[in-house]
Image (cartoon, one colour):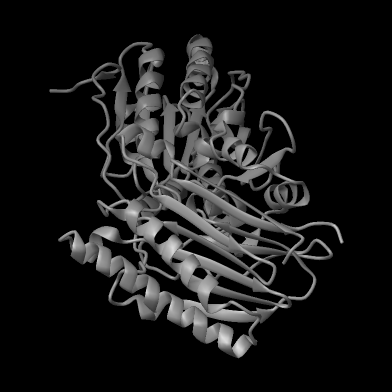
Length: 244
Length: 232
C-alpha cells in the first residue's frame, strides 16, 4: 500500500460548542507497505466519557489490527481477525472503565473500521456512520448498511451487551480500488442519501479526486454550509491511491 | 441545486474545490392560505409586508432557514393561485399580490391540502422527517364558494393529525361561518384591527420554535393577545 495517502480530521460540532463539551469523535489509522487500517468512532452524547470511549476504540483497534496483520493474509483469516479486533477493543474499553471505577456504559461509542490489503477490503460496522469506496473508474459505493431502528436516537454501541445483534463484519474483493472514506454520522447526514444509502457525488468527488490536507478537511467540516445542516461532531478519514 | 427536491445545496468553501452538501434536516411545512378578494384591498400592503418580514425573520435564523418550507396559495379574483410553490425559506422572495373579486375558499382549501400532501410524499421518498404541517388561513370568509366538501376534508385531515389548521379572521369577517369551516380542536381567532405586523411576528416566532423541536414533541407557542381579540 505504498502509493496510498491517508488524511483525517475530527472536529467538534456546534452543539458541543454551545454546551462547552469536548469533541467526542475520534479517528486513528495505521499505514504500512502491506496494510491500510482506518478507524473512526463517535462517542455517545449521553455518555459522560463517550469521547474517551471513542479514542480508546480507535487506538486499541488500530494497534491490534496492525499487530495481527503483519503480513498479507487470505480473506478467511481477515474475517476472523476483524472479529477478534472487536473483542479486543471491547475489553480495552471495559478495562479502562473498571480501572477508573466507572460503569462501561459511560464510555459508549460507535465504531467503524476498514482494513485494506491488496485486492481485499474488510469492514467492521457498529452503529451509524458510513464507509464509502471509489473504484478505479470513479464509481462511488457505500459499503455500510443503514441502521434499522424505530427511534432516531436509538443506536447500538460497541459497549452494549447486545452489540452482537447489530455488529456487521464483512470482507470483499476490491480490485482497482482508488479511495476509501470513513465518516461519522455528522458528515453522513450531509453526504449520503438516507432513502437510498447512496453517496452524493457532489460531496465525494471533490473530496476524493483532489489531494486534500488535514487543514482543508478541518475547513470543510467547520464551514457554515456543513455546520448549518448538522450540529454534530464531524469526522472524515480517507485514504487515496496515488498515480501509478 | 435540485429545485424539485430541495435536498441538495451547493456551498463554496473558502478556496479549493466546491462541495455540495445534502440537506436532510427535518422539515417544518407551512402553507399560507391568503384571502385576496375585493374586501381585502385595504389590507393588501400590510399582508405583503407581513410576508416579507416572515421570510426575513426565518431566513436569518440558523436552524429555521434550512428546515422551514413555505408555500403560499392566494384565493380571490375568482381564482385560486399558487403564488409560491414550496421552497425553503432561505430561497423565499415575497410575492406580489393583487386583490379583487370574490372568494373561492372551498377550492383554495383543496388546493392547499393537495400541495401539502405532495410535499409530504416527496419527503417520505427521500427519507426526510417533517413536523405536522401547518395550514394557516387568513380570510374574511365572505362571499365564498361552496365550502361543504372542503370543510369535511379539512376536519377529517385535522382529526387524523395530518395537518394542523390555524385560522385568522379579519375585517368584516363572518366569524360564525369561519368557525364552522375550521376544525373544532382550534377555533379561529379574530385579528384586532389591522395588526398584521404583530400577527406575522407571532407566526415567525411560532414556526421557528416548531422547526427547532424534535418531530413529535409538544411546542409551546407565544400568546396570541398581541394581535388577536380576546373574547371573555
